[in-house]
Amino acid sequence: MEKKGKTGMENEGVIDTWLRKHRLLYVGATKHPFILSISDGTIDISSFKTWLGQDYIFVRAFVPFVASLIVKAWKESDDRSDMEVILGGMAALNDELEWFKKEAFKWGVQLSHPLLPHKPNQEYCRFLESLMSVEANYTVAITAFWAIEAVYQESFALCLGDESRTPPELKETCQRWGSEAFGKYCCSLKHIANRRLKQASDDELKKAEVALLTVLEHEVEFWNMSRSGS
Ligand SMILES: Cc1ncc(CN)c(N)n1
Image (cartoon, rainbow, N blue to C red):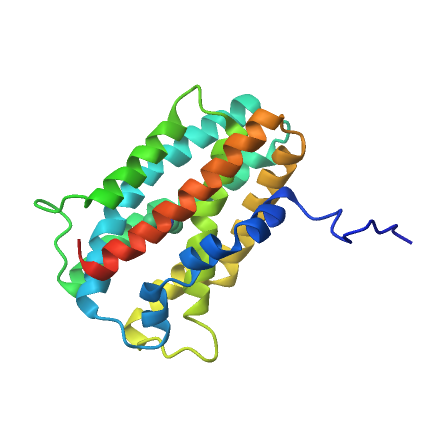
């Protein structure tokens, strides 16, 4: 029989430990009023349109970030399957960009000129850029990557629950990130991040925890921006 320690949580990964420690912020990012308004059906469609246009800009910046992670995984990972998992995510982004164009057309959102990133989006993209540099650490970047994907997964899954009253025309959006398949992909990313964190130095651990918190803060700001339209 497995021997349990004092807390009974000795087998818990680093990420779950951090999520417990920073529970309030995590809940703030995954159960934001913007998401709650989708799931209770009270969403203001102009907020949704703001989110759609801004997220298209974000996802375009997300592609080179994921590409930089593929390079890092190829160079630094001790497990070949990391690169395949990240590559699968990259392939999905190709599809996602097409989906944004189709969805924007459906809602009459202009994705080309003069669509500009709002300040919170600009700041989030700048953070992504800082993680793309060759000096940025793989363990830190993969932790941030997991957090970015996990916030969307948990948020949109909430809008697909039995109790939710998500408007039918927004179900496809929620399905994109709230699906079981996307959930499994997030689990694979979490597994990679936890494996790396288990072997990380104190300095890497500190930086990865800060990166996780920074992602959560940016996600909250991104929802706030979508809700207020600015
Ligand atoms: C702001 C934001 N965060 C996360 C995701 C999920 N890739 C996204 N599309 N946009």
